[in-house]
Image (cartoon, rainbow, N blue to C red):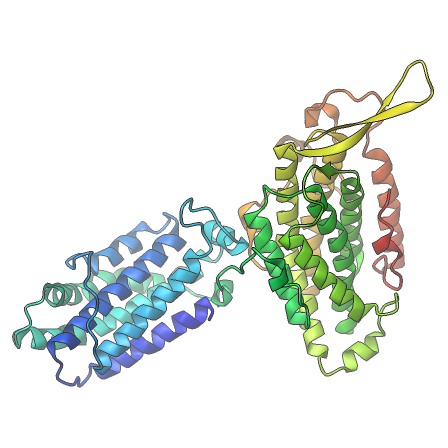
Length: 505
């Protein structure tokens, strides 16, 4: 169940509790204790979520929520069983808010506090913070409206002989919490609010076993595979091998064309294809550079790249069964035409986050220093040259190519979503808005229409090269390809698989 569904359940349960307390049934001591403990759990679960979303920006709301249970001991006893309608409704509300909070907490590592998913980075960056706090404030306001009839009912039970401290303290808190909370809650809840993307938030998928996700059977499975890959990249961004980078770049190149086909052909709309060509050219540059990288590790890709490759292979068989693109009229006439259109939109909405993750993972792999690349040495006394392996780093020729190409991907990916009118899914690209390989380079050079910016040796901090810039040949070739694609006003590769398969330099 999603985060938004849990919050909706909590709101429904609070409305039920308020209705049950209008003319409440007489309760026993255990009924009052169960209701008092549930109330405390509810407010504390709300407070934990407010603290998580606020990130120190709204400490007053957090502090006032703490005052709603300040008289109650922090070590609550287990709630006794109760079938009283008010106690049951309050327990359901508390359980729903706690379950929603557990979904949010699952996006972060419990020991280090670091995000374990792109959604965790979005929360950390404060994406939709106002909307999220507004939803919680409305729940707190509903809980405050329950407090007044709850206090009267608890007072009647306390007079009848209940001596439990938890009932007495909850009675004190419920009498004062409404007056303390209402001004702050009213101010927060009065903000104009839209539906937050986090309403669909779920716990991060498990990424320890590829076989769990490689059985692709529907367009929805393709979206799930991309989400698994994104989560895997967050959790293993420091573990990428050369095989992982090759698999990711080659698969993403093919997936770019397939996404463009779905956006243009499955919907029957003429979406400009310039962004598709730019994104594909960037993946092609990165794929050619990673072809020459090696690492002394396993020859198989990790879970994330393997899952994405399986999804792309399934998608290729459906969209290009004979090597050529499927007739779009046939695609739109099928019973699952809506699923194909949704798939294109879902993929396009996730691309900015995905390309940012790939860039960060490639940068971490090159910083780690266990990747190798070939380096040709010319001998002065001979026209022949010999090769040797050197460490691939952020300053080596192939390393520079990989980082320069991947650093430009997000601009094209965001443009695809913008041209198609698709809302970009929040993620790590919100937490890492710069997404470049060098801050000095970005400050001194404005982004241009070229795919890979020119970088002087002084700006990149590299030793003076003995010959021409290693990016020059790759850049000029791909600029010609992108320019040709723009002149044709269509995505390169639509109609043939040559651009997808021809990756060798």
